[in-house]
Amino acid sequence: MSRYWSDIVSQLTPYVPGEQPKIDGLIKLNTNECPYGPSEKVLAAINGHNTEALRLYSDPQALALKEAIADYHGLSVAQVFVGNGSDEVLAHAFMGLLKHDAPLLFPDISYSFYPVYAQLYGIQTRPVALAEDFSLRVDDLLAVGKNGGIIFPNPNAPTGIALPLTEVERLLQANPDSVVVVDEAYVDFGADTAATLINRYPQLLVVRTLSKSRALAGLRVGYALGHPDLIEALTRVKDSFNSYPLDRLAIAGGVAAMQDLEWFESTRQRIITTRERLVAALEARGAQVLPSAANFVFAQFPGRDGAALAAGLREQRVLVRHFRRPERIAPFLRITIGTEAQTDALLAALDVVLAAAPAA
Ligand SMILES: *Cc1c(COP(=O)(O)O)cnc(C)c1O
Image 1 (cartoon, rainbow, N blue to C red):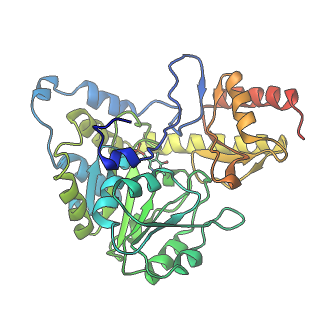
Image 2 (tube, rainbow, N blue to C red):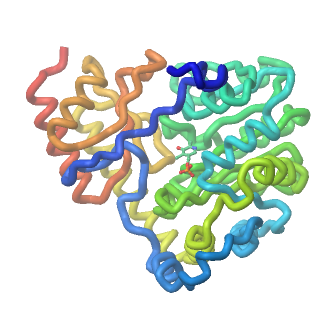
Image 3 (cartoon, protein in one colour):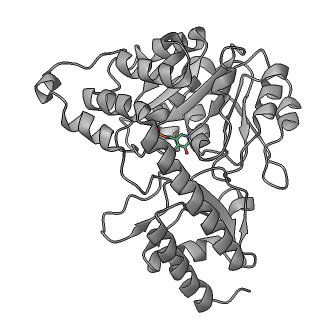
């Protein structure tokens, strides 16, 4: 705290990202990164980049990347916005599309960055409780009545549970008057994308990232798909904030990533296969695992304390994510899908932790 701080900064509660350990040798299953390196074509595009050109600003519209994304989704460039990671895209959506005189709705158990953006931009919010089984009920969103916008991840985070596309569409049909943002950070691991609905629903914004399913968390590339009017709102915010959110290397790497379908298909299949093995192995050890369509699982061991399990795993050099709040999810661990070898190491560590402290 300092007397030089603005009131806004004094009152912020910033988002706390998962630990990025400085020590080597930890098995990192705590921030949903891809355990495999990115496509060789991405590396070639970055390595082959004309570095002398770095003295020049990058393309403020990142047109080459927008074209690659538009091609991938079968949409037009006017329906694509790109940003410095999808977190930045989301922030612009909060400011440009979700700030109105009615509350913004999101699930009470969801991406914990949403309330942070809402606070930053002074947006009134209304958390909507997930059902008993941790699924999101469209009827519960609709029951609130007038809203200033709706945002949710699909699949949801940190539960991993997907909302069927028919339910997304039912929500769009019943909620034509405010923007619905579907945050598809994990969609490639088993859910149906709402990108196919963009041409029919002018209030739909789909937000995506290259961080998870394209193994480029460190390159910082995210994008949004939507009606050109929604895209224009994001562009107006961007051009009032930072004209060049994507650097030249990110644009070059991002284009290659969108074009390498072979790497993309085989990597996501690999992760899905490992996820199914991990789920079975956790259940064999007594865990309750929520049905995951993501590159992580959300699991609890009945009778055991989630924080103690996470701490025990850390002693075994395995990092997983634990959330203390809300209380309903405090028993759970969010475990990122790693390589086969990392999964073996996780299970071995878990066996040590479970044996050391038998369940209450
Ligand atoms: C990881 C994640 C993001 C942010 O991704 P970046 O593109 O790396 O900023 C957004 N939403 C959800 C739900 C995520 O899990």
